Image (tube, rainbow, N blue to C red; front, top):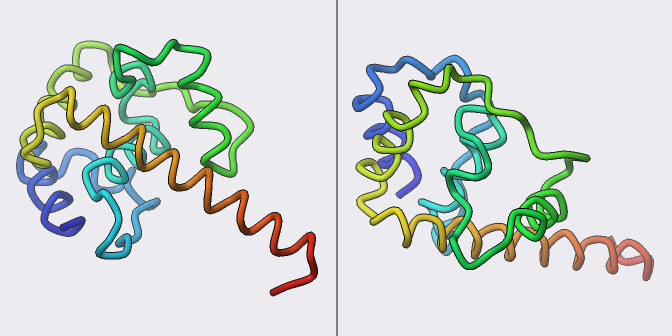
Length: 130
Protein backbone atom coordinates (compact mmCIF):
# COMPACT_ATOMS: atom_id res chain seq x y z
CA UNK A 1 0.00 0.00 0.00
CA UNK A 2 2.72 2.42 0.91
CA UNK A 3 4.46 2.04 -2.45
CA UNK A 4 1.17 2.60 -4.26
CA UNK A 5 0.47 5.79 -2.31
CA UNK A 6 4.03 6.98 -2.87
CA UNK A 7 3.76 6.33 -6.62
CA UNK A 8 0.41 8.11 -6.87
CA UNK A 9 1.73 11.07 -4.91
CA UNK A 10 4.75 11.24 -7.22
CA UNK A 11 2.55 11.27 -10.32
CA UNK A 12 0.16 13.85 -8.88
CA UNK A 13 3.02 16.18 -7.93
CA UNK A 14 5.08 15.50 -11.06
CA UNK A 15 7.84 14.07 -8.81
CA UNK A 16 8.46 17.62 -7.57
CA UNK A 17 9.30 16.37 -4.06
CA UNK A 18 10.99 13.05 -4.78
CA UNK A 19 14.44 14.21 -3.67
CA UNK A 20 12.98 15.54 -0.39
CA UNK A 21 11.47 12.19 0.49
CA UNK A 22 14.58 10.36 1.62
CA UNK A 23 12.79 9.52 4.88
CA UNK A 24 10.59 6.89 3.33
CA UNK A 25 10.68 3.22 4.21
CA UNK A 26 7.89 0.80 3.50
CA UNK A 27 5.85 0.09 6.64
CA UNK A 28 4.61 -3.34 7.56
CA UNK A 29 1.43 -4.55 5.91
CA UNK A 30 -0.52 -4.04 9.13
CA UNK A 31 0.38 -0.32 9.33
CA UNK A 32 -2.09 2.42 8.41
CA UNK A 33 -0.20 3.35 5.27
CA UNK A 34 -1.96 6.61 4.51
CA UNK A 35 -1.29 7.89 8.01
CA UNK A 36 2.34 6.86 7.89
CA UNK A 37 2.80 8.51 4.51
CA UNK A 38 1.21 11.70 5.85
CA UNK A 39 3.52 11.63 8.87
CA UNK A 40 6.43 11.22 6.47
CA UNK A 41 5.40 14.38 4.65
CA UNK A 42 5.31 16.20 8.00
CA UNK A 43 8.79 14.90 8.85
CA UNK A 44 10.06 15.94 5.41
CA UNK A 45 8.64 19.43 6.07
CA UNK A 46 6.41 19.16 2.99
CA UNK A 47 3.22 19.86 4.95
CA UNK A 48 2.54 21.83 8.11
CA UNK A 49 1.51 19.67 11.06
CA UNK A 50 -1.76 21.59 11.25
CA UNK A 51 -2.82 20.23 7.84
CA UNK A 52 -3.11 16.67 9.17
CA UNK A 53 -4.47 17.45 12.64
CA UNK A 54 -7.99 16.13 13.25
CA UNK A 55 -10.37 18.93 14.25
CA UNK A 56 -11.13 17.28 17.60
CA UNK A 57 -7.45 17.35 18.68
CA UNK A 58 -6.11 20.66 19.98
CA UNK A 59 -2.87 21.97 18.52
CA UNK A 60 -0.81 21.47 21.70
CA UNK A 61 -1.95 17.83 22.02
CA UNK A 62 -1.23 17.25 18.33
CA UNK A 63 2.31 18.58 18.59
CA UNK A 64 2.92 16.56 21.74
CA UNK A 65 1.63 13.39 20.06
CA UNK A 66 3.89 14.04 17.07
CA UNK A 67 6.95 14.59 19.26
CA UNK A 68 6.23 11.52 21.39
CA UNK A 69 5.76 9.35 18.31
CA UNK A 70 8.98 10.46 16.63
CA UNK A 71 12.60 10.75 17.62
CA UNK A 72 12.43 14.54 17.30
CA UNK A 73 12.45 17.37 19.79
CA UNK A 74 10.01 19.53 17.86
CA UNK A 75 7.59 19.42 14.97
CA UNK A 76 9.36 20.38 11.73
CA UNK A 77 8.31 23.65 10.12
CA UNK A 78 6.91 23.31 6.62
CA UNK A 79 9.45 24.50 4.07
CA UNK A 80 7.04 24.78 1.15
CA UNK A 81 5.81 28.03 -0.24
CA UNK A 82 2.37 28.57 1.34
CA UNK A 83 0.60 28.57 -2.03
CA UNK A 84 1.82 24.99 -2.71
CA UNK A 85 0.43 23.51 0.50
CA UNK A 86 -3.18 23.07 -0.71
CA UNK A 87 -1.93 21.28 -3.83
CA UNK A 88 0.32 18.93 -1.85
CA UNK A 89 -2.50 18.18 0.60
CA UNK A 90 -4.93 17.53 -2.28
CA UNK A 91 -2.36 15.21 -3.86
CA UNK A 92 -1.98 13.31 -0.61
CA UNK A 93 -5.76 12.94 -0.29
CA UNK A 94 -5.96 11.68 -3.88
CA UNK A 95 -2.96 9.35 -3.49
CA UNK A 96 -4.35 7.73 -0.35
CA UNK A 97 -7.92 7.70 -1.69
CA UNK A 98 -9.09 8.84 1.76
CA UNK A 99 -11.25 11.85 2.60
CA UNK A 100 -9.23 14.46 4.47
CA UNK A 101 -10.96 13.69 7.79
CA UNK A 102 -10.14 9.97 7.51
CA UNK A 103 -6.56 10.77 6.51
CA UNK A 104 -6.21 12.99 9.57
CA UNK A 105 -7.58 10.20 11.76
CA UNK A 106 -5.17 7.73 10.12
CA UNK A 107 -2.28 10.05 10.96
CA UNK A 108 -3.45 10.32 14.56
CA UNK A 109 -3.80 6.54 14.80
CA UNK A 110 -0.37 5.93 13.24
CA UNK A 111 1.27 8.41 15.62
CA UNK A 112 -0.44 6.73 18.56
CA UNK A 113 0.89 3.35 17.40
CA UNK A 114 4.39 4.75 16.94
CA UNK A 115 4.28 6.39 20.37
CA UNK A 116 3.20 3.08 21.90
CA UNK A 117 5.96 1.20 20.11
CA UNK A 118 8.57 3.68 21.33
CA UNK A 119 7.29 3.27 24.88
CA UNK A 120 7.46 -0.51 24.58
CA UNK A 121 11.06 -0.32 23.35
CA UNK A 122 12.08 1.98 26.20
CA UNK A 123 10.48 -0.37 28.74
CA UNK A 124 12.19 -3.37 27.13
CA UNK A 125 15.60 -1.73 27.32
CA UNK A 126 14.96 -0.57 30.88
CA UNK A 127 14.24 -4.19 31.87
CA UNK A 128 17.41 -5.36 30.13
CA UNK A 129 15.66 -7.20 27.30
CA UNK A 130 17.05 -6.68 23.83
